[in-house]
Length: 198
Image (tube, rainbow, N blue to C red; front, side):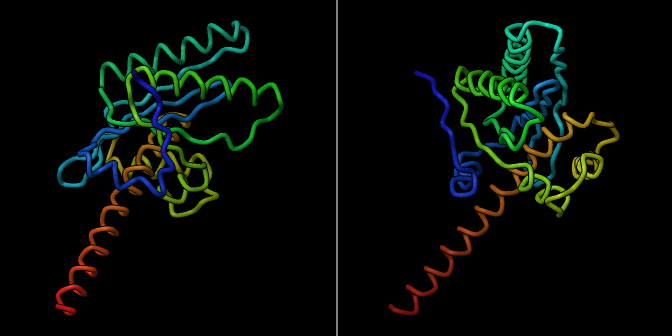
């Protein structure tokens, strides 16, 4: 039975690289526009964008149709590119109560698409994502766009929401890499102390 394995990324990121995961689907949910992006970590450590998209949720269409569009797009991306996990930006704020409700629904269908595919879901807040990509937690969208382009060494110009989704994926890859390095260092220290005691 499939289900969402909802992971606190800061404490469980090490599982990410230990399982040989190299493709990450980042999602930037929005009440109007939702961004998607798949980033692959290559064997040499480089990052490559496998695709980035926006889904425009027209306010004039029924909510059910808008949500299905998100679910349908995500399901197609997962089927086509076969990511190893999904990373979602947390709900930070909404312009009003109605926008917050729609945003919650969008997040819900994103989690459902991940659950159907049996994928783990990780979550990061906007400040952590911006800090990981630009070095500044209060970076503007334009700054995120530029840094994503540089980190992926791409000539493509990503739309703001797609760039945010790619940044979410990059953030997770970076956190996972640091987690593995930290644990390896800790294990070396433990082994060194054991040798000294013997």
